[in-house]
Image (cartoon, rainbow, N blue to C red; front, top):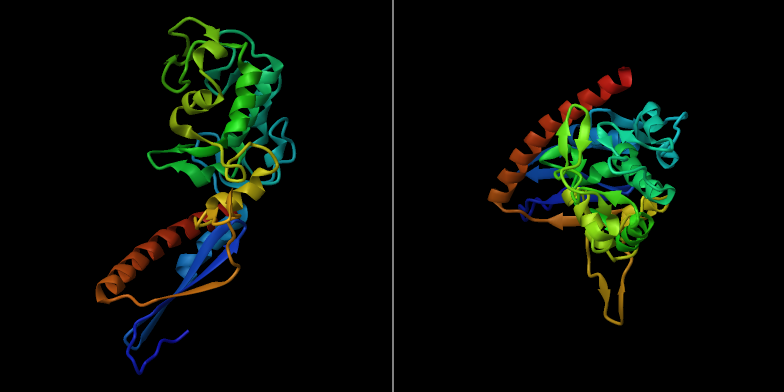
Length: 293
């Protein structure tokens, strides 16, 4: 992938590929007569990690997802789970407490409500997809996960007659070594929350962002893997000139883009690449240690 020496152009060819719903870039950089190939150190760790996915950094979560064959719940994620099988024992009905959070702080949840709470908890604890929305300020949690409004509505409908004393379960309880305690009266979900959207936006703080864009939001079910590829691919013109429907978001398996940066951009890219090499080598070292362990 050489540039035009006669014209003395400086070019960067960026090869984009879609592998397991993730985008990878391989850059071959030419500056003057020097070729710098930043493939191994920058790409290899991400390529290897992508095969297993990623995990949040919660206390009981793995560094990398792996198969769990003895899960009591959260079976959706058994092939590549960020939680250990023993965690799912806490989700066996009737659920009273998950880690340090009491679900029955007002009363035992109804079966329907508990089912939806489990789906959300399984996604948070066990799904390798959750790390795509890792909260940079709190890497054990996620931020603005696009959750389908119709899922929120179904969740709300399932729990509307159950009782809660906190609108935001992260901040509105009183916490001590024994877990969460009510600071306000217990009221029905239907009184605490206006509707499903309000509940999804409020219960876990900024963790979820309700979306009515079908095919671009999650429902914590077996369709999420397919939907994920649409959510994560680069946005393009989402509207067709002849239709109000969103066009499917596709990524070509092989797209070759050509960019001709000036000296300032070159210097910036080179510095960024050097930092990337250091970062990726550290990640690769961690991954090799994980495999060896």
